Length: 142
Ligand SMILES: [Zn+2]
Image 1 (cartoon, protein in one colour):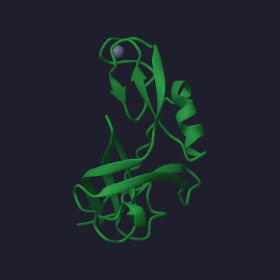
Image 2 (tube, rainbow, N blue to C red):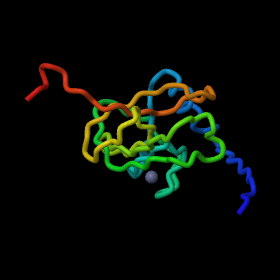
Image 3 (cartoon, rainbow, N blue to C red):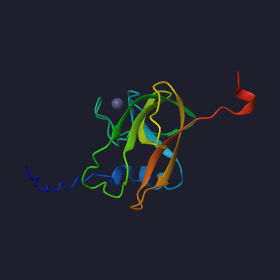
């Protein structure tokens, strides 16, 4: 059976969270927290969907994350044809925030492994969040 090519375009409203995209280029990953009710958002949201406040504060995602989930894509979707091999998207917990990112490397990640997040530009020039396995430094070895 022959397939039919479909094109979808997503328009992401980003004006109120433009700082997130700018900071990604500086290797800074930001989330937001509602100043009124404390709800946390990643990706960052400019308005709280719990209490409807727009009084949000920026929170930087840093340090060590714990990998909670992942999926590996073998069929490259339309719009990602710059990717030449299967890729892995993972979700890792950094404190109270869950962050989604591209998992570095060809091996499958392990649930519970420690990762660090960083940003880099992909082949299309868009800055994205990546995870890499965190290796223990000598003084941290058991
Ligand atoms: Zn709120």
